[in-house]
Every structure is written in structure tokens, then in C-alpha cells.
Image 1: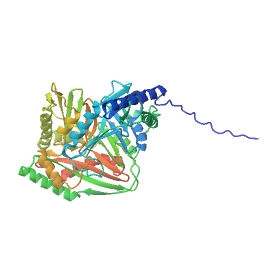
Image 2: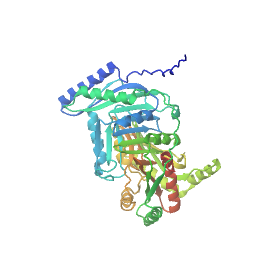
Image 3: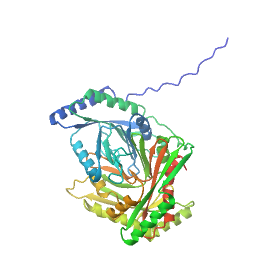
Image 4: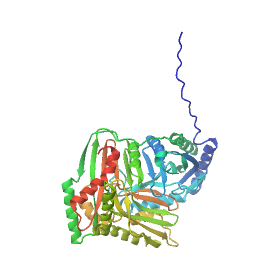
Length: 500
């Protein structure tokens, strides 16, 4: 008689809960304390509880957490190797119109004043301290009407926030130290037991195996068919270049940044986490971000930050002037020399740097400009880049959101002078930029933060995507060359989406 033996089951990995009993009790006690504060002050209070943990891959945490919420945020910084993952919303901070940034800034300052924090904070991580306000701003006020794709101005305090350092290389997915924060906004009728239990369960869903390495290789783009429409069409857009350079010769403005949109409809829905993985692997040296808002995802891999504030140091970046990459080292070096030696490109770049220097000088002492410009080499283009640094003047209380309002949009995004170039774009560009060429990032309660220029980006909605690219025009700009530059800038996102 023969017998057969069933294969042995794989051993079950027993993972400890993200929050143990004592930590759950600590979270509940903090929520109760915050409720007492609310009833005493008769004002809403923001409660923020922290603990250390280990995270193998922030993108994996975000990919899991985003499934159960209409609002999430991913940030992997090229500038300090820090990452932020945010799931859900404890409190929204919104603004509209000309005062949209001021409204958000004032709301964040008011919310931060009534902060009740507890738990165990983690020191030494890149990025800010305490709960963060995360999100972004559209390129221009009222560019996104009520009921549109993305709000005109939206920062929010996430319900769950994880800050960590990105390990090198990112493909290794080694577990790294991180800080978990659970945040809630309490009102006089809030139930602290219900809030604490809900936050603890959210942490379990998102982080139960956060320290387990994924060892996920870069994913190939799934083959799919698609149709695309250029807005404006290629010939019409080149005509806009000629009209804009004509207005430059007339003296209306010195520089104009003209963009275009490619609207894609694919045969299958885009896989957002896979797109982020491919962006990250294919575009080293960029900051990768993704903002989920209801059914839309705005994502990108940007080489440019608008402003960073660390302690009392303020950093801005002028990134303007573009050349393609060469197919050989010799051709690449030749194109770099042409970029550096071009009077047209130098002028385009200098307009941006001068504006940044003057703007930082209003709140900073000892403003320094890096000279000569560096050349930043990306996957398929190279740029002139100049860092501008300043230290906040003694007595200055300016924070990151003050500088976002002061600097945006720089001449690298809209043009110079600002009012004339933006007015011309509104009347002639022909499509809504939404958050393209806007800003995305985070601010902490002390005024530190990072905001990136939202370029090399796309807005996804199921099987539809809008991709964007722009160019800086000055006197002598050639329509054919400028169109070719936009095509080069669109290519990394098209590759990440699998629609080349």
C-alpha cells in the first residue's frame, strides 16, 4: 500500500502588532488629554502621537495604505534622502483665489498652536519635526474650478504619517529607522476611545510587515495600446512659440515659459504603484512624489525644488536652460559645452537666478549664489542649475510657506516679469495646468519644510492620463527646437506609464 504525504506548509511568520498594549494605552491617554484641552480652550486641538519603527520600503507602505483611503501622499526627496508616507486626513487646510497660500499658511499656524503631542519621537531623521502639513498648490489661482480634478490649494495633516531615510541603493530595500505619527483633530464632541482605536487599526493595516524587505525588481511596463491628443496641436503650439517670441521682441516680457499637454487614453487602467516604481528606478537624482485625491493621482519625478527651509537656512534652486543627452560620452560632453556656452540659455538662466536672489534678500541675510552654474544630468536631458542660499535675518519669523508664496511662480515656471507673462499665458496657452508647474511638498509646525516644482509630472485617472512639459522662451527661441525639447521632457513619464 502506498501513501502520499502532502507538502509541508510554509512556516507562518508571526509579526508583532505595530502598537502593543502599552502604546495603545498611551495613544488613548493622549487623546483624552487633548479632549480636556479642547473643552478648556473651546478650540479644536491637533493631537499627534509618535513611536519609532523600521521601514524596508516606503513605496510598499504607501502602496498598501492608499488602497483604503481617497487621500494619500508619497515623497522621496533627492535632497536629504528623506521620505514621507501619509495616509488619510486628520484635517484639511484649503484656500482659493489670490489669498490661497496665505489662507493655508494662517490655518496651519493656528492649528499648530494647539498641538498636543506625545509618545516617543525619533531624532536624527531627515525632514521636519512633529506632524506635517502635506500637499500642494495649483500653478495659478482659480486654475482648478470647484468640482475640478485637484483643489486650487490643499495641504492636509495626515491621519498616519511615516518619516524615514531612504536606504542606498533604493533597490536594496533594507529596513531603515523611521518614525510613525498618528494624528487626529479633536473637537468638543469627539470620542477619544473611538479615535485612538481607529488610528491604531489604521497603523496595523498599513504597517504590519513594514520592516520585511520586498526585494521587488524594477517592473517592466505592461504592454498596452493607447491614443493621444496634443493640446494645443503641434503646429498650433509652434505658432504660439512664434507669437510669444514676437511679444518678447516687442518688450512685453523678457522670458515666457510655455507648456503643452498630451492627453492619453489607454486600453487598460494605469497601475499607479508600478508607475512610481519605474519612475524611481529610471530617474535617479529626482524627487519622486505622488498625491492621491479621490479618483485622481498626480505624480512625478522632479529635478527641481522651489524652496527648502532647514533650521534657519533657506535654499532655493534655479533650474533653467536645457540640452539633450548624447548617445556617447563624446556627444554628451559636446552638448554640455553648447549648453554652458549658449548666450540665449545663459540669459534664460540668469533671469531666474536674479529673481531668486532678490526674493530671498527680503527676509534673509548673507544671500549666496553658487557660481558658475552647475550642469545637472538626468536620464535624457541636462540642465543649468544654480543654488541660492540665505540665512533668515535676526528676528525674522518667515517659514517655508511664506517663501512658497514669495517665490511661486519663478521665471522658470511662468516668465518674467511675472504679471505680464502670466496674463499672456492665461489668454493664450489653451489648457489648464492644474498642479503641473505648481508646487508639492510639506511643512512642519516650526516653519521648516520642502516644496518641489511639480514638473516632469502627470495626472492619472484610471486609464486616462494628462502629461505636461514646458520650455523657457527668450528672444531667438526656435519653435522646432522648443517642441523637440518638450518631447524629450515628456519621455520619462511616457516610459513609466508604458506608452512610448
